[in-house]
Image 1 (cartoon, protein in one colour):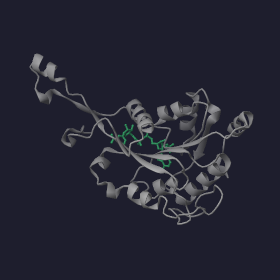
Image 2 (spheres, protein in one colour; image 1 turned 135 degrees about the horizontal axis):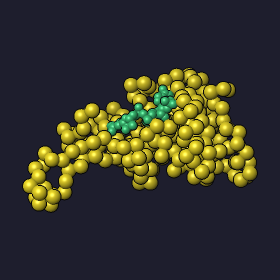
Image 3 (cartoon, rainbow, N blue to C red; image 1 turned 60 degrees about the vertical axis):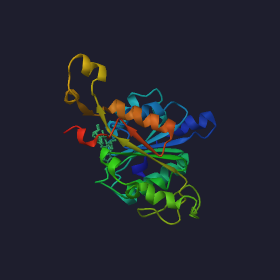
Image 4 (cartoon, protein in one colour; image 1 turned 120 degrees about the horizontal axis):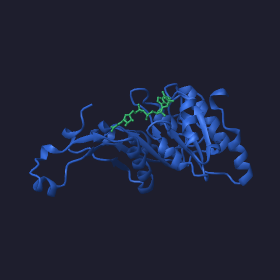
Length: 244
Ligand SMILES: NC(=O)c1ccc[n+]([C@@H]2O[C@H](COP(=O)([O-])OP(=O)(O)OC[C@H]3O[C@@H](n4cnc5c(N)ncnc54)[C@H](OP(=O)(O)O)[C@@H]3O)[C@@H](O)[C@H]2O)c1
């Protein structure tokens, strides 16, 4: 299938090692998560990156010491059927995902994060914008996934996942653990001593959005700590969030 053009060199690398390498998925890993993608592709894993642009993926590969361990899953995640086909092909070839980092614009697709979860057997890190911090957890994917964990959902067999059609089919095993990574902002308030020493007022502080490097580093830290909900930077006080 053209959309799931797996890098044959990766298969060759796996054959050389003689062992099945863990299979990691990064949805949207060619933008602000590119540093995280490069860090996770350390030669011990196959790292599948799902995005639309081949040239952006080539840029990520060029930064890696292990470009042959990357697999580009060229796919538009707003197209549910294509998403299922691409993930099915990738997991049939390299195994179900033992780790997933998922950055999907909620205004583009609300079903794609759930569809992806059906292919993951390890921790699933859902990267979310700052607005999600104030949203009750009952509105998040957690509500959709967690009731299905161990709730008797059985795989239809093999590593193929849900088959055709979007959304989370009842036949899917949900084997992942769900973790949120909320992108906040940086409060650059001067230390109290500086405020006192230089006669600055609290209003002297500035806030700014996270850099790409900070976002990737925060996601990698969240993978290490495995909290149910991690916040990169801060979301408080919300009134001090940067204006665009
Ligand atoms: N603090 C916050 O709350 C917060 C939250 C979100 C973002 N931000 C900031 O906003 C900036 C822009 O974020 P961004 O998400 O637009 O850019 P981005 O993270 O740089 O890129 C988005 C990623 O998703 C992929 N993608 C986008 N649409 C897709 C689709 N329909 N199907 C498959 N893959 C798709 C992109 O690749 P392709 O285009 O090749 O498909 C890329 O890999 C970031 O740099 C970040 O600093 C801040």
